[in-house]
Length: 317
Ligand SMILES: [Zn+2]
Ligand SMILES: [Zn+2]
Image (cartoon, rainbow, N blue to C red):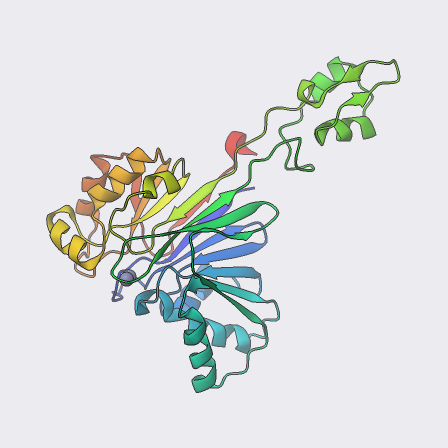
């Protein structure tokens, strides 16, 4: 089961003809998890054919307009399309007042519940059966959160099939374990007693647990202490790269990062892949920024609107 990441908006601050405002959509099984919600996001979703009715959570990094002004339009579009499922929105304190004020002034009638979670402290914000979303305070000019979607490790001991380690039927056959309920018991991490009296442990026929995947998103930020640890081992690190290395001073002043800083973090965090995003409108072409990052961290891409990435499970499972 792949995780798909769709970049719906990759500009910073103001949109350009090629780039919409920040929004990143993660599709995991039947669910969509969105990081930031820039203006016009619903049109980007229509173009990317993501649908509006799936289980969904939105995580807002901070309350600068480019990251949050998409919410009113998205809510309205969802209501006009008769969404019924609850929508959950997470963000720094102020997000509740923002959504309430919009609801009052625009006076649209929502067809679905909106559950707002104001984030006051770092840590695990939501825990689902198969993954958690964690946050840490970043270093921007206003309170801003960086997020990580982290799948739980999948082990034969703790999870039912199909989240257990890989099952090897040929090993089970070699041990002459009768196919059927005994196989599934072993797959679920239990030991079994065979009719001939032998006791077989799960480890004999099931591989080790598989680590979950990890996607990290910085939001707007300068490099900051503690982030390397937060992003450690990320399959995908999506990083602010608003300005090129030559404008490092401006980046510092405005609370942003440069490609080299993003790449340095990816290297230290031992991420698998780095994606630069939130580009200043001055860059029609981002190849120079990409070059700067790749000098330090080779496996880097510059995000484009509608770029899609698949993150498969290890061993293609
Ligand atoms: Zn921004
Ligand atoms: Zn900002």
